[in-house]
Image (cartoon, rainbow, N blue to C red; front, side, top):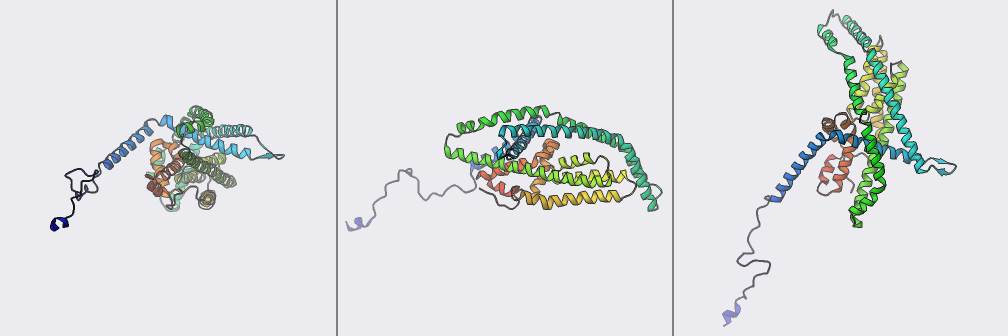
Length: 378
C-alpha cells in the first residue's frame, strides 16, 4: 500500500490535446509555410497584371494622371489667390477658383501657340544652321591640318534635322490632342471633390479607420501639392535666368528655348541635360565664333547646377525624401511604360507610392528602400 501511495496519479488528457498524441511531438519544420508561397505567387501575378493594365490602358490612364496633375495645380493657385487680401478682406474662394482656371487656361494657350510658331520657324531655319555647322567643321579640320573628313560629311548629309523636328512637333501635338479628355477628367474631379467626404464616411463607418484613411489622403495631397508647386517655381526661375543669358548673346528663339527649359525641368536628371544641350547646339551653329556658345553652354549649365543643388534642396527640404537612384530607375520604368508623359509624372507617382508603402506595415520596408535616408514618418 505504501508503494502504491508513492506513485503519481495519472494526468487526464487535456481537452486541447487529442487522445493518443504526445505533447512532445515536434512542430513542422520552419520555412515550409504554404501560405507564404501562395501570397508570393499572388503578389507576382498581381504585379504582372498591373503592368499589363498600365501598358494596355495608357491611352485612358495618362490623361487621367495629367488631369490629377492639373487638379493639384489649380488647387495650389486657388489657395494662393485666396490668400490675397483687399482692404482687409480675402478673395472669396469661388473668385480665386475662377482666377486660377483663367490663369492656367491663358498660360496653356500662350505656351501652345508659342511652341507651335517657334517649331515652324526652327524647321524653316534648319538648312541654314546645317550649312553653318558644315562650315564650322571645315574650319576646325583646317585648323588641325585635315583636308577632309568623309565620315563626318556623309553623316551630316544623312541627318534630316527638319524631319526630326517635325516628328517631335507631331508627337507634341498628339500629346496636346488629349486636352479634351484631360478637361473632361478635370470636370469630374471637381464634381466628385465635394462628394468625396460623404463617400469616404460611407466606405469607412468606423471613426478610427476613417480618420486613419483621411490622414493618409491628406498626406498624399499635401506632399504632391508641395512637389508640384515648388517644382513649378524652381523651373520658372531656371527658365527666366536662362532666358536672360540667351537674350544677352542674341540667341535665336530665346523665348522658345526658355519655355522648353521650363517644361523639361519637370523630367528628372535628363530633362535639365537636354534643356542645356539644345540651346547650346543652336549657339554653336548660329554664330561664327565660339564665344556665344561658351556663354550659353557655361551660363545655362551653371544656372541648372546652382538651382538644382542649392535653390531646390532649400525649397524642397525633406518633403521629397526619394533616393536619387530610385528617381533614375522610376524615370526609366515609367518612361518605358508611358513615354514622355511617364517621364514627367514619374516623381509624383513615386512620392504617392512611398507614402502608401510607409502606411502599411507589410510594405514599410519597401518605403525605407525607396527613401533617401531611410527615415520614414509614421
